[in-house]
Length: 534
Ligand code: TNX
Image (cartoon, rainbow, N blue to C red; front, top):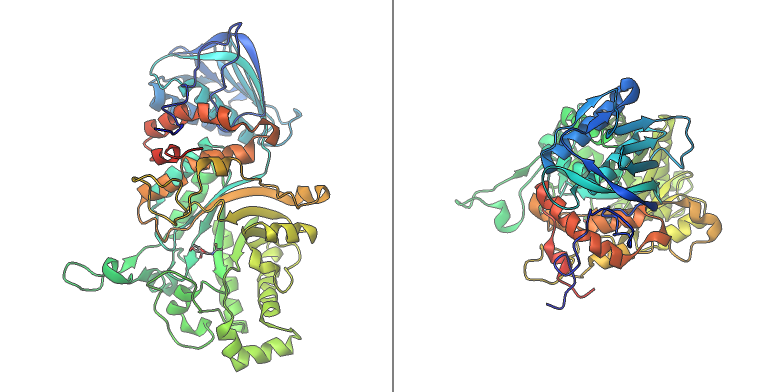
């Protein structure tokens, strides 16, 4: 085969860094700074995990590390406040000088290892790094780790994945497994696309029909019929207890869950449940098929009351600073055809329906700001003038990011097609189905998160990047996992590691250990990622 891949690349090694050249540190994302030392640390059955002071959160981090180590190598380290020689110390020092709460140092000598950070998130990431070093050889029992000092901190604050659970639903356990993998990649933002034309997936206590009616569709074609040819509904949603459980699970892994309520378009499931929210008063079905649909929320006060009530319940569930209000693909036909909507637009002194959408988003933006939150939306929110203080998620390429930063807005890069993981990653025969342009691991690794057109003075507005997984084609969890991984590893290194430390060939050398880790944690990453000519 003319391909390069885990088979072709030399296996990453945890062998001691003695005199000779340093082995690639088998960690993904690559740490910002690694200083080799002589000797090696043996992490074995007798190794203690020391949490000086016994802080509860740090103890939880140590326990999490112990559990992972147990799963990977069968080691069961004891946790306590005392350490001694050969211990792994979890050193939380709020006064220490670190670049951010996510930064850490990991100091490994023959006598033991110390993870230091000013905040628990940093300790957690330091422990993830140590776990990767301890699992690089894929073996069981004692782990031999080269002595070294790692100083690490992220390149961007927003390192994310978006999962669309409206088109195809994923269970709480499946979402948690994804959050686990995200944490092991130091990805910290999970954007949860919860509402769309094809399904409303979050319980709202005041409006039960959103999930009873809006959570069910009869899919078009064979998928919507049982063996007897009878309609076979596709129904699913998360209860509020389940949402709280996921949000807490994520928080324990230092992941923020950013919920999305998509509006004013992608509203067909909501309008199917409550037709009075729409412009026409008619009730559509929850959409049975894909594509851009025309159902829009109305602009009258009762619709805003509904949306604010929904957002109120969502903000109780999601502590995230950002609330995603969508804004994408809102074809304006229904607004144009409604005399009442046009009368309202004129009364507001708005020139066109773009400005009306901007007013619509702005009004809800003010509402969530009154609760101390911030609006983030797809780059269509730039049309008609973006609401002040809105953060823009640039999906139609990078133009949105360029314009938004010029206007002083923060941005997150989530550009189609480059970071749209619903596109396939190879044209191998066993490739997971998806949209048909190939976006391979390497192009994700090399994607320029800071578009060159952004002025140096505005670069601070780039919060980071995320990959989006729309799930029209990803019916099963297996497909979701393979579409996301290993490309998410490339995204993680792109968004965590300083640009000067990006090195594709070095990354490729670290991938065999990463692929082995996916296998050992029961996660399905696509081997087909390597069946391309890089
Ligand atoms: C556009 S990207 C959408 C989604 C679709 C996706 C793929 C974006 C903000 N909106 O609703 O799932 O294309 O078909």
